[in-house]
Length: 378
Image (cartoon, rainbow, N blue to C red; front, side, top):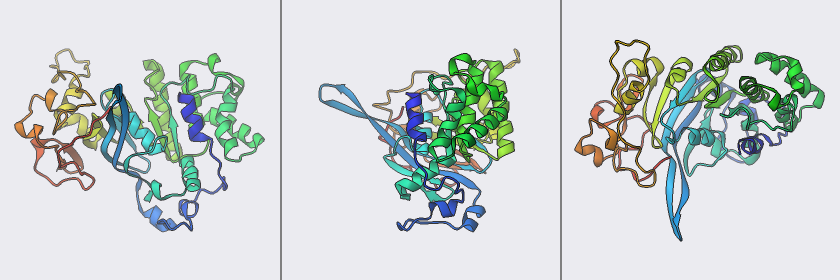
């Protein structure tokens, strides 16, 4: 499945393989908005996600159908050259948000804007070209690689699809292998001949083959042991500094997210409940869910008292609680929590939280959640 997703994502034809200017490449006579190079240079936001919503049908038996919303009004932005971490329990919608951003699945509503250009307004050909600027590193380093293709062939595959000659693709594959800490001789290896850490380095090299600007890492180190995790994380950090990359980093490991991220987005049942700078989140979390998540991370100090524990089970995504979805597990729940979905407010500068405990402060411009919610998430 993972390989199939990648092939569907990568196997697109580009009529202008060497064109990298955003305004020129996306300009089109079809009538949608275009941006000059000056407009693009003035904005420091690479990706802006606004009110993304995605629902999937599920069968409940004979002629019975319900809908599970994997994303419900998800909004955030990523500035150029930075890393935004997305955290939450399994099933909170992190991976769905990543696939919506990359176009692997289409949203029911909402906007994904890359360098100020709404992706939905682009023609099919222009969207295919945009995919060169957004690449993904999948979770499982083995299933993401074709076992019948050598390492060199896997790395060269996206370049060949986009019109690069065979010899040039082979030379660039060798350079990419060096860049990710492998030897060019590894180009002749097959996935089963390599360790998990080496295979993930190959996946990173393949993601860099088209010189992307945004790399989405979906649990990119969760399948690796701790020592190899550290090596891969350091590699990603070095590549970001060297190539000016922007990361959307998805993980359930809070320590990894703290190490990698400039800002952190916390999700619960398909909704954003808190967003702020990484240091701010780990030192002064506001949302009860965030505090419970951080309290579940064990510390090295035996004298440090444990944080608040996360009690109860995750509600059914088919029939979520009304109002605030976390209220059934929240020790500070109030009657209003069952009636209204909390708006995403800014009680501190640059710190957003969706909780009725923090009603003071302006509502986030990207938030449309002040009305009761009826959608659900996985």
